Length: 289
Image 1 (cartoon, one colour):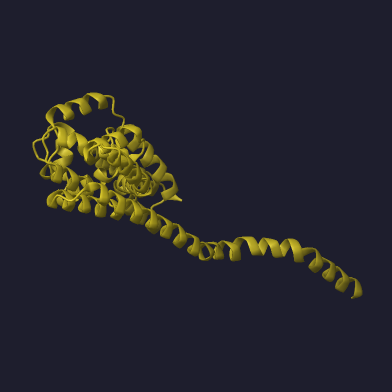
Image 2 (cartoon, rainbow, N blue to C red):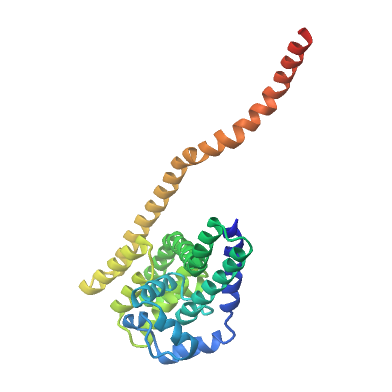
């Protein structure tokens, strides 16, 4: 019950904190400075103000893990790493204040336990939200990849270069994969090598198919292999894997439906079918007695 109260409250507080009124200016500033290198993924101690305090209070390894989670979510402009690091202690303090108010009314053992666990839960609510959003984004990338490769293959066979085909697909696309391709092209435009830009694309995603595709493109580019053949092979493999995943989900469906069918649908069905007969039998027995 307490979790049902604190989780929505923490989500509302976090969403209020994450409002970014200067998002467009920050994006333009970042584009003017160039791309962020891989070494800049961990926060630095040079930040000032509340953001710098949050960076200093957070362990470096944990902050790096949060930075990877943000990379998987596409690094939303409304929640940079520094703001996330200062929002988490605020949520924990809010949870502690709420739990102390509860414990002050009737200090029982259960409420004392809640007093300890509630700030911890509030502290990790942003992690749960970011992880869920990142997982959904990675699934969307995996679903979009076969169609994206087909479009790139058509463009390459029509005479465009690989980067031009990627730009065309990114321009026409609207999903998270198109956004990742745009970021990869921006990395190359500001001076990053193609290999590093492709590897950074693979590091920002958990989609295994995308990582395999990036490795194939990097190897083909290193050995001078025609990318049209690589795209054709990868597109065929992606379509086969997508069909296999659909078949796997279809085979798991009866097992998933079994428990709701046994505990929710069948009891109600038995009551509707057998209920009148049982009532009639009981009435007859009582009448005979």
